Image 1 (cartoon, one colour):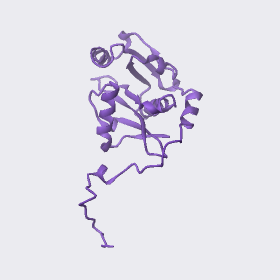
Image 2 (image 1 turned 90 degrees about the vertical axis):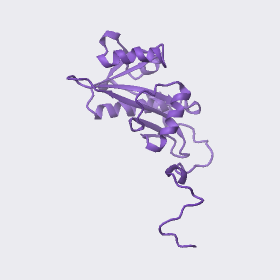
Image 3 (image 1 turned 60 degrees about the horizontal axis):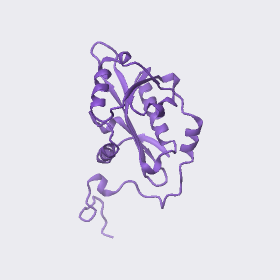
Image 4 (image 1 turned 30 degrees about the vertical axis):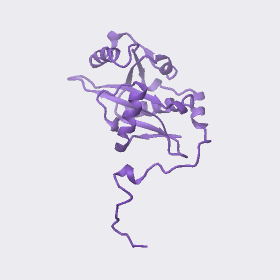
Length: 194
């Protein structure tokens, strides 16, 4: 199991699962997402994104959002590693604090996120919280974490390492159709005719 950047061709897959899980797809850009993958089967297990809000004359604000784990992969540490990768990316972008607006605050609390007052939210996130409550998550509350306080509990790290390997045969995760190629009619530059 590993977490990697999302690829452009996964846009439809991401949007389908975001809609299915009732997550936020506001300002969707596939390049902002990461995807958790099973290295043996090539199966996608979860995803999430960071969203950077531009603030005029102020420092930008980083939000974790649209974090989801597919049904068959829950309780195996997948979400923890998606969150970990997103926090690493936020750190790489120079952020010291990361915010989340969610009704699943208990889940994020195990990593060190803490609930804050709405008045403590940076301006763009105050409006975003109101929009989120009116839309996809009426129970959303503001959370924040200082990046240097982020921790993945050992039990989640171990669960991720032990994610079941009892899936069927490993599958090729990329097909000709993924690249817009019709394998029935395609010709190849170096086709030898054999």
